[in-house]
Amino acid sequence: MKPPSRAPKPARRPGSGPAPAPGKPAPGKPAPGKPAAATPGLAARILAVDGLEQVLRHGAALEDALDADVALDPRDRALAYRILATSLRRIGTLRSLIAKLMERGLPKSAPRLESVLLAGATQILFMDVPNHAAVGLCVDVARADRNTAGFAGLVNAVLRRLTREADALMVGISPDFADTPEWMGQRWIKAYGLETTRAIAAMHKVEPPLDITVKAEGGGQVGRAGGEDGAACGGGGHHHRRGSLVVPPHPAEGKPGAAEALRPGGGRGCGGLCRRPVRCGAAGRAV
Image 1 (spheres, rainbow, N blue to C red):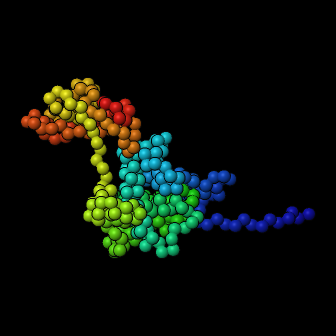
Image 2: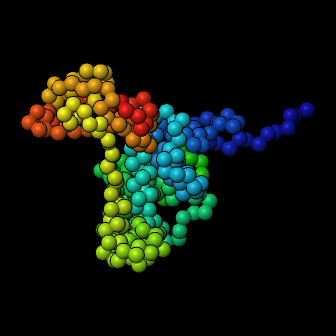
């Protein structure tokens, strides 16, 4: 008796590789929420986008938005914080630009896409990041998440257009009040007048400097504290004791934090900045 014939299996497309095991992503497709490769700078962008999602979708405070459990180089964490903070500081301008770039609006099936575009536009417009790096890494961020992977091409097209047409797209967006909520701007104008309100809004676009409180001791000479008692600074060979600086908390630095201070000249100052960072055991404590 002749065995029943089986229908031939459909041929896989060239280059598609073997079929994936059940429950595993197809070759070349990143696992949901994971970067496709350890590309330099990619983890920082993913963390920044995650932080934007926490603030914009879940109401988290800025200082709580970056996941402290993510193991990341301090420089990458600082970069992620800067992308996040700058995006929120300029969110009115950024959203106006994205609306111009996407006439049909953002896809409802992938709300995270807005955060990816915000992070990319922030780097293109307001940070010293090469355009190709800002675009390419944000495309990788989109590919790294199951909900946005299908829109990676859209991210590429939108951000590339922004690199070409930024000046034209900025026409019609208020340079003074785009990043100030309208209701807040109206209250300020009523209370302080137009010019003062314009000055307040302008200052909100500037990243505030790190505030370091210096203890008054030893004739007022202050230098950058070394990591050890009596450590010499790299600028002029003078020495410092622990406890000379008080460093406030800063979300970008993590724990332990890092800070810097200048030593006033007074005829005896070092010629330039000292080379050692302050290492504090807990944010806000003297080191």
